[in-house]
Image 1 (cartoon, helix red, strand yellow):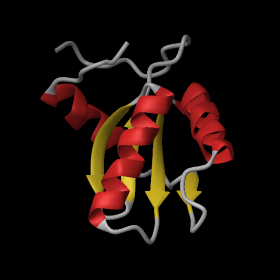
Image 2 (cartoon, one colour):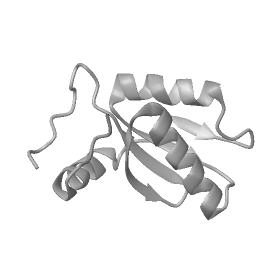
Image 3 (tube, helix red, strand yellow):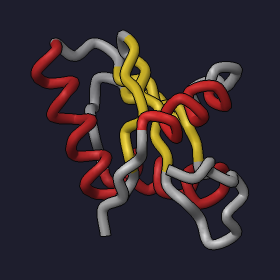
Image 4 (tube, one colour):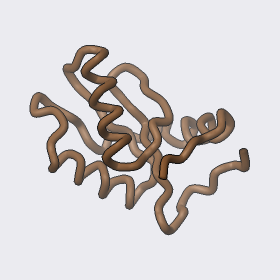
Length: 100
């Protein structure tokens, strides 16, 4: 179940994410099962997180981001440099998104 966000919703989430620090950082080992589990747990708990993808070139970084989004069933709200903002609604629905 892939979720699509309207521009308004993305803007809202970017505003919320602005003050966040990356909770998961990908190092030289790349995307491992452990890293994916960590991202998954963070999304369950926070709904909105930042992940730092360090040291990869553009294409590799995009492949890593696509894999994270696919594996965690999240949405990449925005990518700035090495930081990607991810969102996935949890059962608690902590973040109330504006209507489309």
